[in-house]
Each structure stands twice: as C-alpha cells, then as structure tokens.
Image 1 (cartoon, one colour):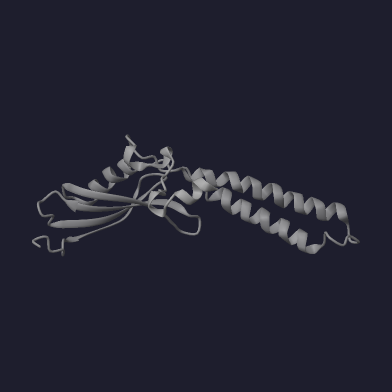
Image 2 (cartoon, one colour):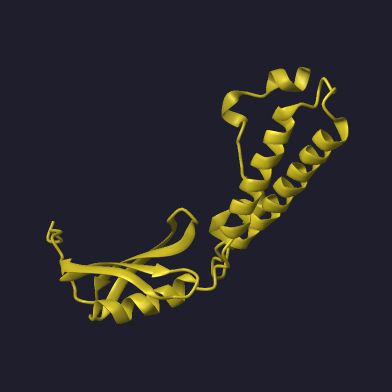
Length: 167
C-alpha cells in the first residue's frame, strides 16, 4: 500500500500491448475475410438444433421447455442460415480493387483511398475506392465501387475536382 501512495497521477502511463502498436508494423495490412461469419453460423445452428431437440424430448407437459424454446430454435436456425450465406470469401484485396478502379475511371491515378463496406441484404463485400488524378493539384476525382468477391466494377463516378488546393 505504501508504494501506491508514492505514485502520482503524472507517473502513471497507459500503453498498448506490443502486438497492437501500429507504428512498429512493417508490411501490407491484410483485411479480415468475411468467411469468418460462418463460424458463428455453425454455433447458431447447433444451438437451434439443441433447442428443437429439447422441445421434442420434453413433450407437452414440460414446465421449462415450451413453445418458446421451439420458436427460439427455429429463429436460431434461420439466423444461422443467414449468417452462413453472408460469409462471402473476400477474394479481391485493395490492390486488385485499385487496379480495377483505375481502369474504370479513364485517367492516370495519383492518390487513392480504399474502404471496405458491405452492400445488400446478403452483406456482399464491396470496395469503395476514392481516386484523384495524377495532376498536381489533382484536376479530377472519382469514386468507384468494386465487388470484393469477383472484382467487377459495380458503379463509377468522376468529376472535375471542386476542392481549392491553392490555400
């Protein structure tokens, strides 16, 4: 206890664990794959089957296992099926998406930014690529949506850059 009293607030420092410090990381960043959604899908299905089995075994006279357990089991099976089908493989990485986007806009690309999002009810992975022309300052910018599963360009939009870079 005496050691705690000698420590001031100014001496206490929070720090990240070594594996979470981004400043020391060298190498390309790897986006997590969507197919990890299939792991909880299997767990939902197993729990759903367990609920339905418990309802079937307990019968009509059971106090703790009633129609609500059956409904929960069916709901878990349905949600497990939804989670399973939304677990697409992310086969297109950000570099492949940038190449597809560069082809779609029709101008030499300078700076670009990639963001992974999901579209539709099935949560299909989609890259959103923001591109600027290689001019200095950039004269044109564009936004391209690239499918993360097969690499097709879904939509693209280009315009003259309205930003004032003279500042």
